[in-house]
Image (cartoon, rainbow, N blue to C red; front, side, top):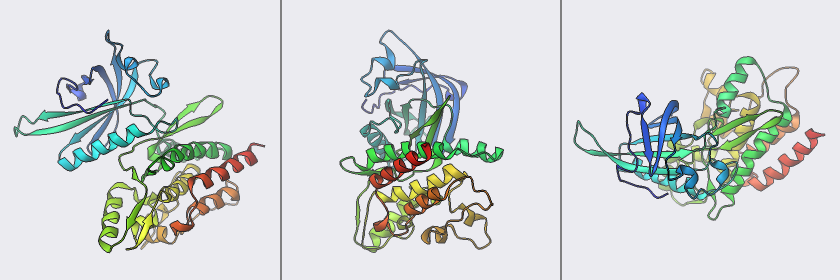
Length: 341
């Protein structure tokens, strides 16, 4: 599944009109657009199977990712610069490293050179193929539930969260350790199952990098802050990525902070610090740096105090005292056991 720069291997033809796309030797019909952001578009596609067997004939790490009805999600990225090209290559590389049921797998990909007819110059387009999950993200579900004033049951919250922990553990315990760097409800796909808790899958590895970084100068600290401002969503970004010390060691516990914010968001549909954006003179950064969490008011809170304490355990402003992913899993398993009985 190496990158290909041959126009024959990934022919783009009138995507907006529902045309066909070739990703290497496999052809896909575009059914509809699922979403977009920045320079990327996501489409629902259906494989046009040829005699070669299509995707099913490729060496997929996990055959269960082969679609029964031939539908997949295809991400198309418009690449305008060498820097963007490097970032897409890095995303493809990182996405190809992991194999875990709670991490979205990259099934195939191609990068092609496309000639700009107006300027006569060449640019690139990338096509990334993934399994499709049509129930949307945690963010989509949260928006719907917020409108209806509905809440997940406590046990469902914990079971969704446990799956995210499992996916992150795979990344954090990888050699070398990787941090996702953008854990948030918008990057968690949800698939509903009748009579069972939803399946949760962490996606979008465009910001994932080796977790351990040694910061030894003010220049390095500022570079990390600038990188984080571009790649890590502000309401879920750890304090050390807002104001990085000039001499410090960064590790995967930046994700633990984001995980705490995400657990809060699974419960209450927003990050624990977004209230600051609506306050006169409020500062999101100050609220995060001081871990100033506000819990929804009301005489009858929908979630028990142990869940609130669990969130605060992850939202330690000092990363050195923040728990690791293995600690989080031990604790969430205890909570699942407690609230299952």
